[in-house]
Length: 333
Image 1 (tube, rainbow, N blue to C red):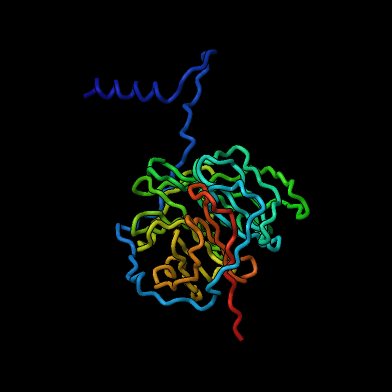
Image 2: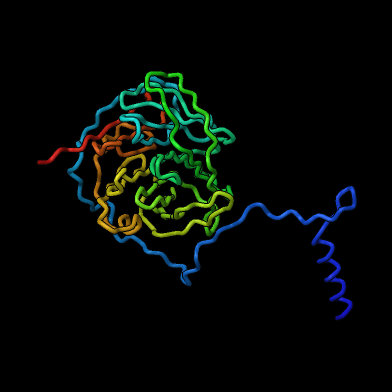
């Protein structure tokens, strides 16, 4: 036993330091990726919704027909996310998904080309959604790009790239604005899974990811402040019945929520002091959708609460054109 103990101490001592070429002892390099795990709750169960998606009421808050506006740029083939600026009236941010450029394109509700934002040091592995709202600096608004697509469920981590909204020249299509985003790294508690829906709660700055799976979805959260130099394990909050979700959004005032897939949109009105998970666990309403998109990928609320917008991929559908569909809020007395 004494001999084994002596050998163990020698091994530990040999690993505790190394020598450089000059013979000077140096401390071992520490693992630079810290993993932050959610608190242990003592149970593996999370709430499950009990509503039937075939028995939903229709919301009467929005027009049942959409106003379609063609985008000036028709070289967008795989649009996957859309978000509305609150600093620039009518300005929208869109992006494409896997393998496309590391750029967020700037347009507006008229479909005009206003240039792009280039995310330096970032590769578009599979950007699937985008959100807009508050962040670390309370005096600024931020853009969040969701690197969460994983069709083969093979990536050990997913990322959300966060950066302050840059200054835009609204009279130019030549905006080419470089940003270096914060890189928020997340892992799922039980291994890789595909997702395309990112939601930012403007009331708490928490980030939510809803997975894209057949006939089901799990809602996860990364609470604010999200770690910058560590990988955060996402916390599961709710099991939902939605099939192959492609996008979601929370209204700028935090009181309304949308989720969608390629063929349907769901709407919730959030109650005072209710969490996002509590809201989504309640039965939603069917929101208007014209089914004018072969591969509907994105949805966002308008900046001023006047309705919501959608857009779609066109790559697999020759003859389709890149466009915005706007569903106007119906004014009530």
